[in-house]
Image 1 (cartoon, rainbow, N blue to C red):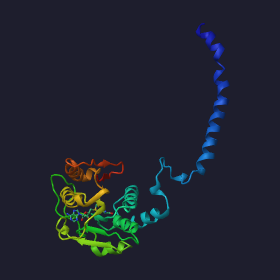
Image 2 (cartoon, rainbow, N blue to C red):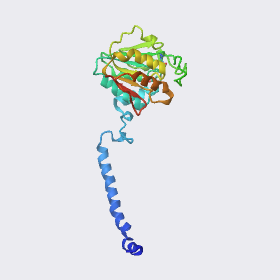
Image 3 (cartoon, helix red, strand yellow):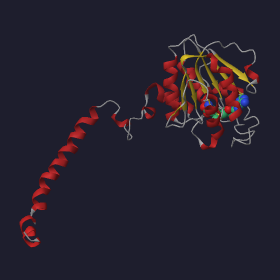
Image 4 (tube, protein in one colour):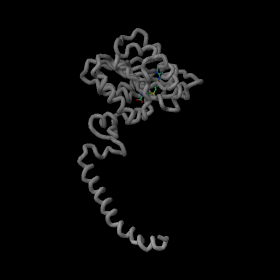
Length: 250
Ligand SMILES: C[S@@+](CC[C@H](N)C(=O)[O-])C[C@H]1O[C@@H](n2cnc3c(N)ncnc32)[C@H](O)[C@@H]1O
């Protein structure tokens, strides 16, 4: 059969096929509209399910802390869920790197009416000296805070203990035996190594160590410190798409 005869025979095919294809697509679209509104929190598919954008308990915490935190809602959500899971272990919560108290407020909220303490470590007056080889941050960054500011920002003061000064000096003589959640948001190499050296053995099996700054180029020293520290440990840090890294203690 030559080309001309093919053409004669099939030239009307696109016109014949168009109506059924259009009708098929219309039905598919109608089905989608019929199913999706019945799914709880359907509006949070953006495009994947993003519960940190919703309301409820977390929404209230997120909105309150947004005025004085550097931590984005998706990272705050990870921390929130870890805190809820860690509550089943019999250990304290520790945060190193508090700044104005955003994530500390979140952690304190999850511990309300519970016999668990939250220990907060920071200079509360800005970054100490940094390591020029690894850190982009410089001494004096985050200076616009104070212990009083943090105490005002954290609504839940029960069981919250403050340690003002330079890490690791402030670790001396503290009364923390078991840790179920260690949140490290220090951004700089030496501070992170010193914190891991001190607290690693106190973290309970099944407890969490979460690093806020691991994946950020501006905190390259943080990733270096974490990878170096865990190179001879049984745990393998999990790099999250939020920029955080998570360690589940063996
Ligand atoms: C990125 S900020 C913490 C952000 C906070 N988690 C939030 O919710 O916004 C880092 C903090 O680490 C503190 N920091 C870093 N190294 C420290 C050290 N060696 N001793 C005490 N504080 C330190 C800085 O003072 C700064 O407040």
